[in-house]
Amino acid sequence: MAILVTGGAGYIGCHTCLELLDAGYDVIVIDNFSNSHPESLRRVMEITGKKLTVYSLDLLDKKSLETVFQQNQIEAVIHFAGLKAVGESVLFPLSYYQTNILSTVNLCEMMKRYDVKHFVFSSSATVYGIPEQVPICEKASLRANNPYGRTKRMIEEILRDLFQSDPNWSIALLRYFNPIGAHESGKIGENPKEIPNNLMPYITQVAIGKLQVLSIYGNDYPTRDGTGIRDYIHVVDLAKGHVKALEKMMTTTGVETYNLGTGKGYSVLELVAAFEKVSGLKIPYKIVERRPGDIAASFADVSKAKRELGWVASKGIEEMCRDAWKWQTQNPYGYESRKEQ
Image (cartoon, rainbow, N blue to C red; front, side, top):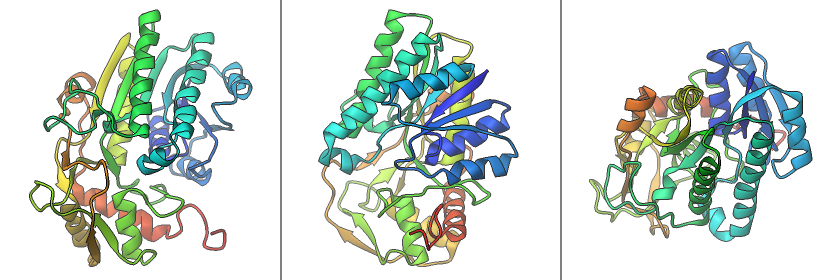
């Protein structure tokens, strides 16, 4: 029996595959490599000394997807696959609705056909939109304010309806806050294909000289230093949270939602300062206008995950920065060589 991981070559996906292999699971990966690289999976196998089964296919291709279920005894699914950039989703909403929602429906149809009813879904704190209060608990109002966040919210509703139709399903909805960092080996990490959308890879690319200056979007928020506050979580802690959720889903039925974060908020300038401390480098930055839809502060109430999953994030902000910098320095061009770029 194996665990199917969709989008397993991506940033969070490959770290989760590594943790699953280390925990003794057989792992099957589906990825179309549209925003990931197969090298990440080769390195996961190198680090663990264990094999992955990898299928290069798109979840929108039902025929190919069924082949995976026919050829393997799948016990549970962890679903990462999908488009993931907030700004891009505003520009291309139809692509996001088609890719994220239809691919999930196809996957669930196949799971139902082959009687696979243990499911861990990669959701996002973006479903909360502008929070009424922080820390944010799982019962907070959902008011996603961009197409990416709305696809996550819609998929959560689809999965709730699926359980209502068949109470044998066991589904975990994992709402991530802000994953950063990399595996301590420096062999796998965040690998943006173009200019990074996320703060940490932007910082590391400025530090290594690929980008000239960090743009900080707004310094007039009602926060400690005027910059936005976020809940940054080490990607390895996040990956371990998936293993804990999977273990829980294997022994229960129902739909449960869990925030995965640290429960602590750091501002943009505090993250920059932490990175400067561990790297010994100065990060040049400039203050620019706020981005539409950005919020002042967002951090998680993580008590439910601790109580029900026995999971807590263990790595601090300096360790997150140190591991991200190790990945960047060892892989200045990500998973590709300079020649390939």
